Image (tube, rainbow, N blue to C red; front, side, top):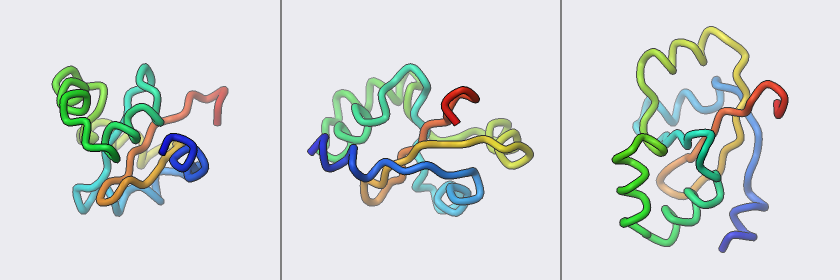
Length: 96
């Protein structure tokens, strides 16, 4: 599963993610959580892990302030689709 997800990770800008945010399907992965760990937990229905990350803010919906910053700037992301969600993680400037 992890290798499959790894092969599906792609890069994009906010404009590509905005429609997924608008339909409520975007999950933002914090920089201190591995995107593949989060994607694998969602894909394999590891509710315990997902709920723990949601509770502490390591995984969740993007707030208005974050969305405004992304829309106004040139943020870059890595993302992977785990139906029905799109999990995205903002890349550090050095990674972009």
